[in-house]
View 1 (tube, one colour):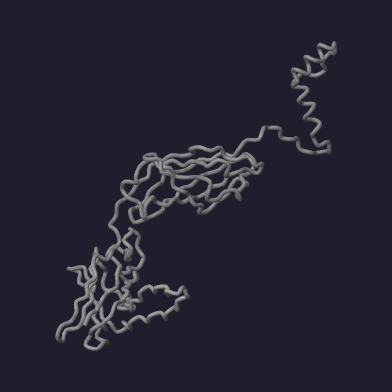
View 2 (view 1 turned 135 degrees about the vertical axis):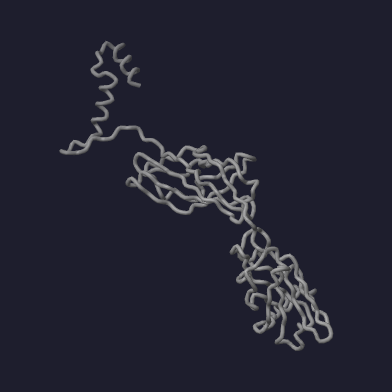
Length: 307
């Protein structure tokens, strides 16, 4: 523009009064605050914030389902902390290219807001991390997410790379088999639960729940609304007895409070709570066998008791 202006002026016979640099200084001076003591304007061109991911401590175990990592955002003025959320980055496996969504855990600021360290967590591709998940991972910034105070956003792309180490550990205990041994003659019933790992001992008898099975109601043929039956009442097992056999890894319940120690005939929904069912390495029951400890086991079909 300035070069064109000067060329036009010269063609008209005029003598340019300003060099290009002087013309720019003249324009800038028009925006300066003339008041006494006013600070000079910073005419440095604005720059977008930057991001760098730290993947130096990327390590998980096979009984865990998440991994955490940090991304540091920097800006010459200030990072807009409110723009940092769960949609900023993804964790991408170099092998296969699977992108894992990263959820925001926390944000810490420093340098008067010019630096923000965001901690994210990514969820494993399966219920838990597996040995085959180990390898190189990269953090990729999503376009148009984290901003600075001027509204400029971090440029999209890879901002860090590291190796995920997966330590294989024994899985939590699971239920392998449930068997009802019906008492014959004068013998009581026994409910035997076989487990996959050594336990510290028997849980409280109340860890087992037997509720009369209520089959799903069929809708009336006339299209009317079906009546909702009352919820069945669980059997009172507060006086039941439970023992643990470490050689067989079995828990055995008996029911001395019931007549002849026998369960009433019928079908029952069986639930074994995770609390108290603890392996010798400190893991509670993995009821649904997904690799994560701490959930109850529910027998997949009604337990039938025949007399």
